[in-house]
Length: 372
Image 1 (cartoon, rainbow, N blue to C red):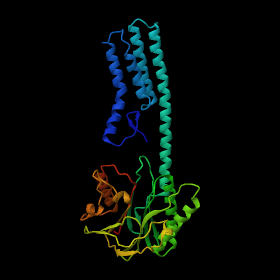
Image 2: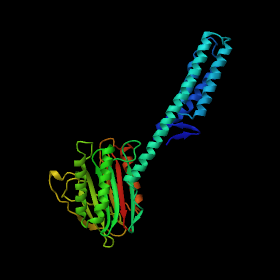
Image 3: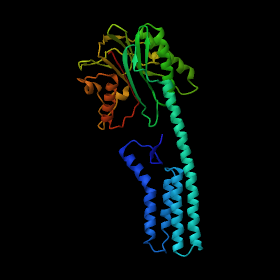
Image 4: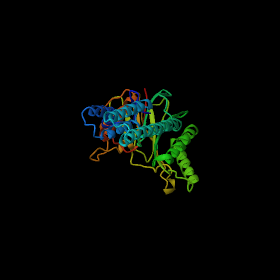
């Protein structure tokens, strides 16, 4: 996607300073041409320095403007150089021929630059569309309502321009209740994306077939370890991931949680109370069972009407400000009431951005489920 100013194409940007630079780049060719034309009337004819200004304007326009505007800038520059030499009564001189030839060569060069750059824009746009499609295939957006529960999700990849990284979430309605997964694969890049695909696929299958939430976690553990063993020595593959699982039975007003080395979720109640779902017992992340066996123990908590389960990755809890202080979601959300899961996620994301001044360094994935 390109950001345009009128019919001119400019490089995309996100900050105020980038936006200012974009405007200056857009104005630069016209300012240079206007200045050169004005100087023609005041600078003595024996000076030839105006050629550099007439040449600079098309070169600046070439990567950022559409072709027709590049041609307009070139035409003005060529007319300016020709008029300058006509005033000096030296159109036939070697110096005049050199200047006019240089202007024509620059005009041809700007056309080539424009075509190459805009072809790159086209290829980049296609790549972004493919990446977006891959994200939807690997990490589809959950429905807003699942088995009577309200659901909202938010994902941001840390890598600029990326659509997907190593964080994941999934929601599945089963006969035992609605089951939820939020996880974080070690590392980034395509190996992390491959691990995400393995985990989500295994979760979909295990959630439908397994009555125990602990067993669902163990099935994902085996799936990740099996895939890592198959790929070892052939290609890079991330071998472990942290994850937290939740199961919300359809009608009994409770929720069960299993944690595999992941940041603990929060439950925001309708009266503004906030509970961190944490215990002293811990379990190894998925894919690390060879280091020992710590069977995960599920917790059962009250999940009444109006309560919202908030699950997130360490992009939230490890977000730091300029002084290196970590973001504290408990302190940020305590005492606040939210009537929709999407509203809760918006507040958390905004608070994290404010805390880091927009300089977060990790992927950010959040999922919220509300019992209406």
